Image 1 (tube, one colour):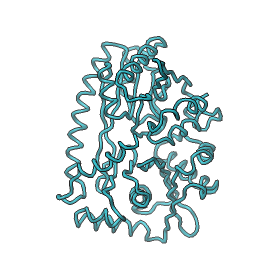
Image 2 (image 1 turned 180 degrees about the vertical axis):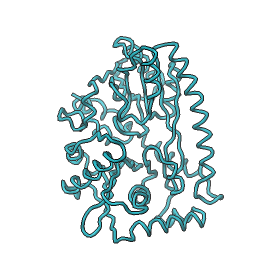
Image 3 (image 1 turned 60 degrees about the vertical axis):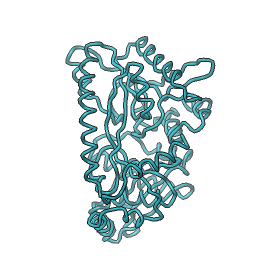
Length: 386
């Protein structure tokens, strides 16, 4: 069902998917084979409305738990249940298991009135099917503000992104850093490979089932040790390899002819999206090398403007990744509960802005480096393709 819908409609909205491979990501997870385990708990309801021409609201699903969202509302759910209500099901508008910012309200033209119609339709549907709430996560800022106009509560969080300042190579990036920070990164990269470890970039036709077997081993080991829950099964990786191999980058670490660690990345039009990492051997700084420094190397080599290294991790700042706000919008059906949530998100936004401002003072860049100019450079290129 979803693949047909994507084929008929999502791909018609040219240039709106950021990145386009994530539409295929959803398709691979909805082909009926259970490739994404958690999707078994999500109802396949993808409403859209028509106003003279088709309008699309991105990936709307009703959901029975919080897994795979990256914008967490555990406290809200707990408070709702303690008050005697049912927080689930709720409506979630997002890309499953993927904390990547992009358009969530898709239209063939950038029309704010059409976005308001979509948001109104979502609220109408939510009332009809009696869900507790609507959650639109990792929105573009303009659509986030549009959602506020429609009556959604505004929430902020942060991620860490590396911006390409037109560097010719990694040394060009290092030249923008303060001397001490530059030396620290060089030392970390050297120490990461000190045990005879080699790094491979694997993408496109060079990806094999052997690579996926190794990576899945890393993924499961890390999931079992750190998170306790693995969303993706082995078949999923074969499926995305079949449909989007050119948009996948595996960064693999090998020692004594054996793969010991790796990270999966997705290649967008101008952005490298870092996702899952795993390892079966512990080596100092290897995580930083595989997930952060090699991603920067690859982005520079491909002329990509940005690396999004995923959620969490203020330690990324010292590695040249800047704090960036992320945006989500929330509609709460119950008026009294909505007031409590509104107070919470207002305070939270203030804290996030203060934390970003604080982290800005701790970047490794020289004091003469214009961080806003760095951001604008990547954003100007991104806007050309969005």
